[in-house]
Length: 122
Image 1 (cartoon, rainbow, N blue to C red):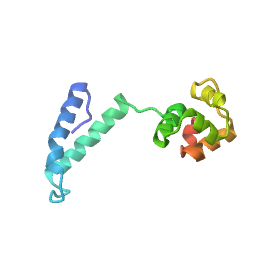
Image 2: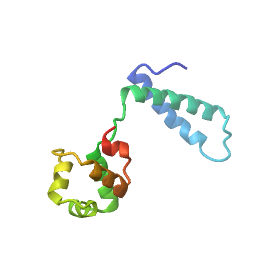
Image 3: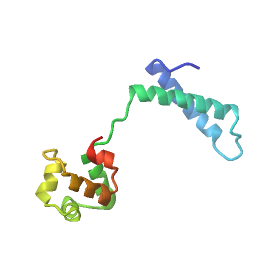
Image 4: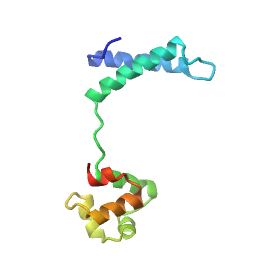
């Protein structure tokens, strides 16, 4: 098989994956079954096509903080208190009007378990 070149080919490959998935479930299906081999090849082709045509960008700091707030059940007021900053300061950061200081960025990374690369935007 060669690389997927068109959206029509991509959609056909997605449909084929949907057909193959039920045939590859279960412990009784050998790893080297024709269905598993085909699924592996097509999945790689689809992943390559998606990397080019549907790239996933790096998450923004604000989006990541909002996700962590949701996961941890935090309000902005509670998060500000947790980080030791004022609510207006946090609001400025969340609205993109200010960047966190290096010390605050470290605090965000540690207390919210966010990768330093996301916090620092690298």
